[in-house]
Structure formats: structure tokens, C-alpha cells
Amino acid sequence: MNPAHYASLVATTRRLGIANVARVLAYRLRCRIGAVPRRARVEGGGEYFLPGERGTDSLPLPALPFRLFGWKDIASQGLDPPDWLLDPFTGRRHDGPNRPWHRLPDFDPARSDVKALWELSRWDWVLQLVQKHRYTGESIYLSQLNRWLDDWLAKNPPYRGPNWKCGQEASIRVMRLATAALILNQVREPAAPLLELLRIHLCRIEPTVAYARAQDNNHGTSEAAALFIGGSWLGAQGDAKGPRWSEQGRRMLEERTSRLFGVDGGFSQYSVNYHRLALDTLSLAELWGRRCALPEFSGRFRTRAAAAARWLYALTDRTTGDAPNLGANDGANLLPLADADYRDCRPSVQLAMALFRDEVAYSGGNGWNHPLRWLAIERPAANATMPASAQLDDGGYAVVRRGDAMAVMRYPRFRFRPGHADALHVDLWRNGENLLRDGGSYSYADAQAMKYFAGTACHNTVQFDGRDQMRKLGRFLFGDWLETETVEPLVDNGDAATFAAAYRDREGARHLRRIALSDAELHVEDEVRGFARNAVLRWRLAPGDWRIEGGMVTNGKHVLTVAGSMPIVRFELTVGWESRYYMQKTELPVVEVEVREPGKLVSGYLWRR
Figure 1 (cartoon, helix red, strand yellow):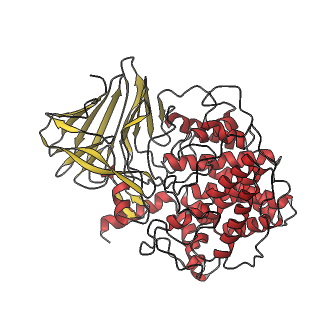
Figure 2 (tube, helix red, strand yellow):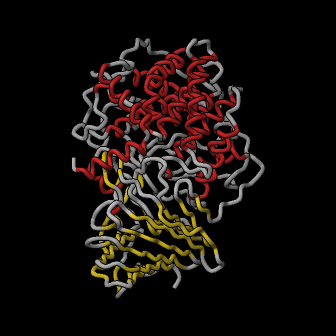
């Protein structure tokens, strides 16, 4: 390890917090010595869910058929359970539940991406089968659900094998069971096998919540919500441990929400999809508390949750429900209750706005209302006002709107560890179309993919001397966290809405970016200096028939121009990758503009000529 790398590691450790680092080390020690749940005797069998009341005309269509990560169909097996230990992408099968979970590596690409194994075991299908049973009244769906749960437990004995590896995965299963019980109206009189299933999950979650807290991400919110929901459920049925689990989960969820969500609603992971996951978690916890007549969460909790709902509302496209692919995106969708695409955020926004702001974000009767109807939530009478331009400074986002166009600019405000080297990235949207795009994640197990998709070259920004903006220290860890050096507040002067920010990296390179969004154009000025060899500006375009004509790039409808105060040594149309869904990547055109002297680059993206 060279001195610069070591110094970066030490500084990053301080930024992460000594207490958090200590929690991680303690967790690893517990795993090493086996001081974690290792076995449990489970009877198995029986009915986890009982026949529910017949569907009514008030229920909407069930959600779209379950797909892995929102896009990949699983092999048709009829009523038979799938192979829970088969990687559907590689065809490799994990060697089974022969080893305790804490003896398995976090990532083993030689076997498979463990998330590909986990996806079926997040139990999205539980919700789909419950919806079909309620909608049709047919018992076949409930029989299938009970048989699949029984098979899952038999093939994944408690605390052995990859599907018990992660406390958050266990927590998501708890929340899926709770959501199913809400839909079936079986919260107050649950079946005995269901209570046993809950209990073994909470026994797995509780001992490692300190590790979840140390991550300062959605692991903490998920595991806290699972303890709160599952503990209160068990406690109401006379389980002696239930009240303790419930109170532990409540305290942790209050603390995590206060710490991880900013005053303006931004979440610690700097990711739109992880923001949705955490927001859905808060929504489910709030709804569970109401249905079970539990004490209300604090005013601070509700205020932060309301701000988080407004934050996602601000970044979601009203016409499609899609949102910028900012930050990590692992395919998570906690409440897939709507007949809508995985990337459609409107159902989550509508649910959270109703619960925490007593408003509806979207009028009409489309899929965004489905969670309200399935969960029997009365639709509020008040309509929310669509957010205009907003500077969300806690997390470093400027959302600039003009007419039917929206630009979102990222700038460094890192209280928590950044997941992508995406400083000063700009996303551009118009009429529901993502014109200038971010890259996504693709796979956490593929080291080369992680380097590319999280790196600076996968974002609409400037890269200096071929390096990432921050030093890579681990699979999910950057060092040398950037800090914003200059901010010019968001202003709309009537002709255009403008914003600017700048940073200086560890090597002294400086980037100042000014954006101006008008009714017909996004205008961007990039001042760059302090680099040794070169600076490369990239614009990642929507797929299409793009070509270079003179000093511009065009697809026949839109035009991108770039001019410089210094000589441009390369103006090239290249091919890059984007991942809109986890484990899926597709090509897209990328404009690369290279300079070797300091100065100003001026870009214009025009959609009206």
C-alpha cells in the first residue's frame, strides 16, 4: 500500500466514524468465532396463510408477473417451486445449505453474483400470489403460496446457506409477510406456522443490527422496521420476546430516520432507487403502526419521512414515473403492488405522500393508486403541488425545471460514503424521455463492471487524467471524498433557470460547472484547470441514430454542440454502457471531448431548431 493510499484510508476511516468501524470489526469477530445464529429447529409444514375473503370490485388488477430485478422472467414451473439455489443468469447452482451463513464469503464471482440467488428469496412472489388470491378468490394461489414457503424453508434451513447471509434480506422477507397479512386481513389472527417463520427471521436479524447500523444505509432502516413490525406482531400473540424486539426496532428506526435522511429529504446513499427502498420501508412501518393501533412515531420521524416523500416526488417524471438513474441501483422494490414497471416510482410517491403529507401526488385512477387500494388506505382529498426547481443541498442535488424539461445536477455534499464518482453529473429529461443519462450499476459481483459503472467515465461530467474523481479503496468504498468548493444558488431569471458548483480533487484539478435550462436548450459551461495531461468531457446520449456533422452531434431532431476556449484535440462519438435494471446492460452513444489545456468548454443540447 503506497503512502497516499494509506493516508486516504486513514482519513476515510475517520469520516466513516470510529464507532461504525468498531461495529464492523465486532461483527466480523462474531462471525469468525461463530457467535451468531447457527441452527434452529423448525417444524415446517402447514398453512402460513389462511383463505381470505373474496375480492371485491374495489381491488385493482394484481401487479405484473414477477420478474427478477424487474425485467427477467423466471423459467415457467407451473405450481412447482423454483430452485432457490440456482443462479438463473449463469445456470450455476450454489452447493446448498451445507455451511453456516457466516462461513460464506460476501462475494464469490466464481460461484455467482449472490444477489442473483437472493432475488427469488426476497419473496416478491408472496405479494403476487396474495393479490391473485384476493382478486379472484381462487384457493389455488394460496395453496401455491403455502407450498412455496414450505419448500423454501426446507431447502434453506435456518441460518445455513447463502439466503441467510444478509440481515437485510431476512428483513425484506419479514416485511413481505407483513404486507401479505395486511392484504389478507390476517394481522390479528395469524396462523401458527407464520409466527414460527417470523420468529426464526427475527432471531437472525437481531444479533447483527450493529453491523447494519455501521453501514449508514438502508440495511439499518430495513432491519429496524422488520424488528418493529415482526416484534409487535409476535408480541400481540403472546410471544415473550416480541415486545423487546418491537421496542428495539422502533428506537432504531427513529434514530436511523433522523440520522440518514436530511432536512430536505435526501437519503444517505445518494441513490434514487435506494431512496425509494428506504421510503417504502418508512411507509410500511407507519401503516403497520396504524393498523395495529401502536403508539405513533415521533414528530421528527414523520417530518423526515414527509420530506423524503417530497424529495422523490421532485425527481420523478410525472408522465412515465421514471427517475434519474443516479447512484447505485440493485433492483430493489419493496412494495411491488402496482401494475407498473419496476422503474415507475409513482406508486411509492403516492403512498408516502398520502401517509406522511395527507396529499395525493398524482390525480386520476391509474396504477399509482394501486398500493392505496390494496392496503385499504383512504385516498386524501388534497392535491400536492408539483415541485418546481429546487436546490436539495443536504445531499447535493439541484433540480432545475423549465416547461416540460428537467435537469438534475449532482454536486458533492458527502456526510456519508459516496457510492459513485459522479460529481457535477447532469441528467436531462424532456416529456418523459431521458436525453442525457446516468449509467446505473449492473452487478456488484463483477469487479470490472463495478469499476466502470461507479466510476467517473460512466457519468456526464469531466474526467481528469484518466482517473476517478475519488480514490477507490474497496468494492463499495471511495476515499478522498470531494467537497464542494463553490455554489451559485439556483435562480430563475425568466429566460432560464441557472445553477453552478465547483470542486477541487486530491491532485489539485478543479472543475466549475454552470448550467442554464431554458424552454429550448440546456446550456452548460465547464471551466477546467489543474490537470496534468488531459481532461475528457462526456455526454451520454439516449440510444438512437446519432452522427457527427461538422462541430455538432445530431440525431435529426436534437443537436449537441461543444466549443472550447482552448484547442479541442478529440471530438468523438463512442459507445458506452448503461444499466437501467440490475444484471442488464445495453449500449448507448457517448460523446467524448478531450482537451489538454485549461480553459472553458461550452456545451449546448437543443431540442428546438
